[in-house]
Image (tube, rainbow, N blue to C red):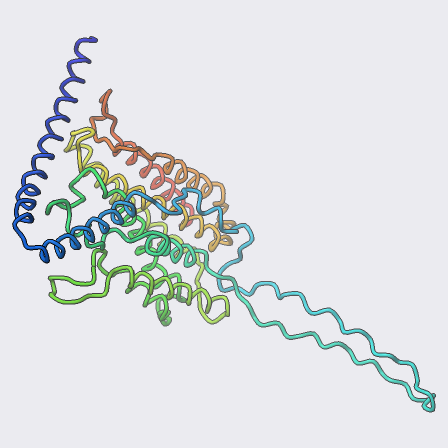
Length: 400
């Protein structure tokens, strides 16, 4: 048995060594030809080429840094929101305390006017401006987008990510693509939520007017994920993806500001929650099918270069939906209380949070019964199906 294990390990390390040697040769041959060409250039051209090489090297350092450092990544991020103190969005909140009464005026008669008295004037309380509750769903949607494009660089539209690894897409390599997949997973959940905000949550019934800010936010979030300053199809200058997503952040926060001023609508009805839960369950069902297909048809173990893309996209979805469903718990507090669903909803949130504990350094796609190469995709698929099952149960209770 020990001899078999050692033989397998030697084979694995031998394969890795041959792979690294082949990659080194692949890189060294064109670099050697370029170096010989550089030596034949004149002094001015050498200076120009040198500046270009230094600039490209600095760009790669920045690119690698951005792909490896995940700023403000925190699976417990929903804890920063005070959901327990929230009210149903759009409903008036308690009026702020009134100002203290003014000090009473002096009623002592002045000399020579003994019969004259000064009547005290009652203090006038200032009229409080009307204020309504904000939407936690809209707030979390904006904050998740802010996390993607402001607190972190949006990887998918960076020029070096688009260029790939010697022409090979980074998604087909085992490195520098995990953060991009994670961000796209978050964006998939955010896009779905923006659609629901426009179609049902941010309006009364189906015949009312669509909210203009939510409409703009949805359009901006649907923009292509990989747009840079210049493109080939169509040919010409473009607006990069992060600019559109930053505009969506402003639109979502403008909606919440208007909601706080009682000038917008959030329709926290049970049928709207049913639709939102159903859409999320469908999204997770689709992701589970993608994981299942990869896990069943590819068994390269640690050497499956697409397994990490599938895993971190699914992780990004769960990361986003954890915060969004916690926000839905706040926005639909009255509906959940009426249906006695708080306990089941809490269970679903706990399952979502437990799925985020799975953060492998390397993603493996081995067989389900493998002893050396685990199947991280199968495990992630199990977590997703557990959450989806909770959502289906919630939907059934809401429909009663």
